[in-house]
Amino acid sequence: MPLFPALRFTVPVIAAACLLGGCSGSTSTGTPKVATLQSADVAASPSTSVDDQRPLVRLDASDEEREDSIKLWAACVFKLGGPGYEDPRSLIWHRGEAKAEKIRVACQTKEPETYEQRQQRTDIAAFRDNQREWYKCAKEAGYKLTPPEEDGQFGLTEVGPNGDFGSAKMEDCRKEAFKE
Image 1 (cartoon, rainbow, N blue to C red):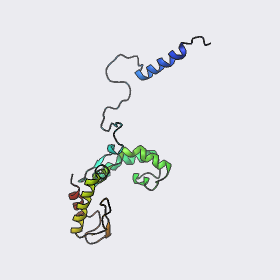
Image 2: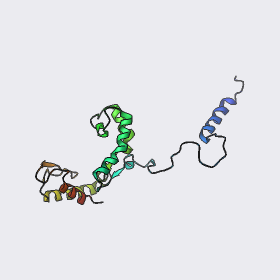
Image 3: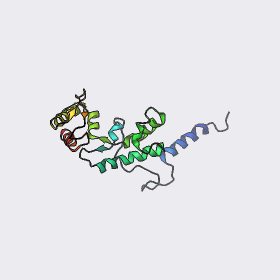
Image 4: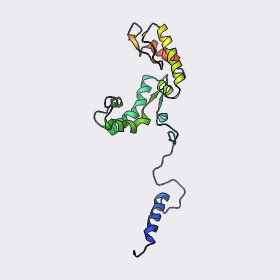
């Protein structure tokens, strides 16, 4: 029989209380002496999807703003991936690899999401309507297009005098169709 049988239970309880309570010995109610999160910008609750925490790229964002929105994601991917992961889009090239999947999950809240991607994820009916509007506008502007798929997405059958999906006219049609 142990010499102090009550200590067998008392010590773990006291240790747990100290860990949970901080056990700093300080009675100050001022600034905490431990690292804390001061903002709740992206505080996740059990009902919040990881995707809902992703930064949103506005429809009218400039190329520079789009690239800036990728920088935090890129830093996260490179920090966890190292060589071969300098461009966060490289996760696509490593699809199926365990390391790439761990990186993707760890950095997911930093990956920017376009307005269209968010709408497709959260309101598929509105997304389909907007896709139809975009298709109609692009067709009227003279683009040669594939027939829309079930979700409304479409492609180019040829690059004509108007250019491709990155052309000014196509961008104008997209912005008009998806205006926030």
